[in-house]
Amino acid sequence: MSTLTIALDRPRCEGHGLCEEEAPQLMHLDDEGDLVLDTAEVTDGSPEAAAASAAVRVCPVAALRLA
Amino acid sequence: MSTEAPATSDADLFSDEVLLDPYPTYEALSETAGVVHLPANDVYALTRYDVIRDALADTETFSSSSIGFNPMVNEALQGTSLASDPPVHTQLRATLSANLTPRALRGLKGQIEEKADTLVAELVETGSFEAIDQLGRVFPIQVVADLIGFQDDVRATMLRWGQAAMEVIGPLNQRTVENFPIAGELYGWCSQVTAEDLAPGSVGRGIFDAEARGDIPAGAAGHIIHQYLGAGVDTTVAAIGNIVALFAAHPDQLALVRKDHALVGSAFNEVLRYWAPVHAWGRRVTRDVEVDGTLVPAGSQVAILFGAGNRDPRHYDAADEFLVERNPVDHLSFGYGPHGCAGQGLARLEAHAIITSLAKRVDRLVVGEATRVPSNITRSIDALPVLEVVPA
Image (cartoon, rainbow over all chains, first blue to last red; front, side, top):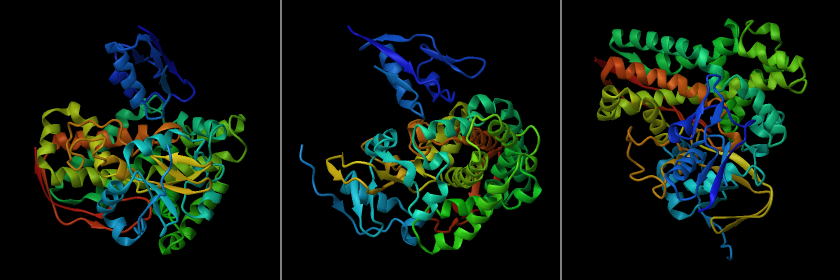
């Protein structure tokens, strides 16, 4: 099983928070409204990878990547 | 893979008929191909969800320097984040967005909700009202004017300026020509606006502070103010009118939101998906590129049809049905990628506040016939009489 890394383009991130709704177990907005990646690596094919993929997909400014 | 000659259609994206109701044309174009050449407009129309989303993400190939459909507006918009590409775009966008992100707006959430609820309560109490003149046009202007710090003289012209700013993005037709002088007033005002013209402590004043600190290029502050006015008003007016019209037409869907307020966000996403406020944005293709099996030559103008992508049955089941439980967070109405709508956080706050108030206070809305006026870019209702409010 390979590992996938969640990458955040922080300058691009605007804190819309749609990713947190898709993957609350992996990331959250802190009190300042900045995104915190609670988990940066997920196992390919796992439910966490599916959640990470959904979070990447819904970011309106494409600030997240999974690779 | 060999690329096919492009599919062609004689549709005119900017004819009155299409602007009044583009969905039959969108469906026909989308059925034809993901990319359709339109000689009438000299554009390649992108018509399917995946094709559009991929193009929005690829700013190198699909350049925003040609966001408009006539050369004058593209020239006028140079220096703004709307018509620039990374890396210039990145800095301009960061300054524009810094004050429009959900984090920056959190302090305004309570005020916006209170403003919305006060307005909706008054209209419900009245029992009948004009949804566009008394709600759709009033609320976003109040919010944006307070946010930017516009004084009374500018508030009075915001609606006209906002409408004109969108119209002139169209091709060089009569609508565009008639609106250039009005858009020119907006541009002229923004060119000479100073920090002192905006209320102390406002976001607009903050932009000038950023310019003074050297965070943004000299002269950029006026461009950014222009964008708040040009892009922050007309589309939100449209979206609020759409909320009222769609809930009136689909009382069963309003009932679902009344029962479960957690559906407010999903409902707004569905409003945006079902009726896109923006008809088309332009892009310039910077290199020969294969799109969905079709070669689009370098230098071509592309038209991104948000409404077509949002109704693509290849992406959404029952794409032509209005369903508030769908929660299409990936709708295209706010764009996507680096040029995703900078004001979307504010638009969400405003729309969520209105929907929440309606869901709380209204059981059903009885409306008369909606009036539409053809507009090059913004698709909105011009008048919508609410004949009777059945209160909750």
